Length: 148
Image (tube, rainbow, N blue to C red):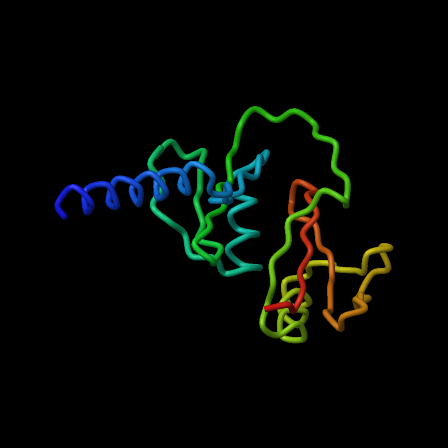
């Protein structure tokens, strides 16, 4: 009986180990390369009200934010080199109330628009989700939707 139990535990352990090695990769953070750390952290703090996390480098060139869903965003200042920015390459944040978020953007004088680039317009996806697009201080595109 003891030998049978040992074999069962060995098999279960092997299955468990093989499942971990076959597990799907998951995202843990997004890194955003910026020219001016203060300008960018002001933007992300005011527009999205992300909670700042303790960051290990303590060099004044990194700011880490909790962006929800157990994910973080690392804003990193480094010697600036121009980057190619295309709207197809964007990050997306969902908000619970699009009207409230747009009101905040208007108060902060942050321009927004729909996918084609019509200022002040909102996309409505076929599934009813509203989308808008803004750019951060370095020109990176950010989609905001209400698929919260």
